[in-house]
Image (cartoon, rainbow, N blue to C red; front, side, top):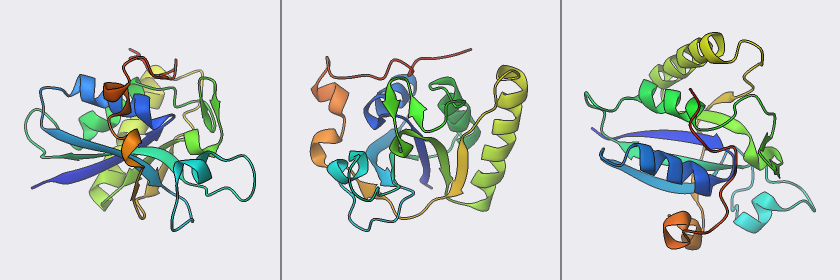
Length: 169
């Protein structure tokens, strides 16, 4: 049975690339998009605009996967924490704004419990001097980003990658 996992960790291009690279031998399907906001028709221009009313959406990655002995939700959450800085509020590297916030959007009560447990463990083991500011929120409506954003760094190998997207510990 296929499950979904949804994460926001800064610019969605780098988040997608990190998950694809790390889980390349597993059967995952990724899509970048927008979630967590109120605009019923978000677009890249609206989400990233500094003028007018912000959409409150985050740039996010949605993963479809089949849980098995090699891949499970807790592993995805732990990797999420390893590949970005969860201690910076509304930013990753030079990218600033609520669209770049750190967030886990859970799809079931079980995912929420796992996300909170992994977060507490990661806080205790890896970020004792800094507070994790990752939001853990119920997943809302998902909006795929425009086609040119999907697998962007595969199509544009020299495209922008946030410098805070690298593996820690």
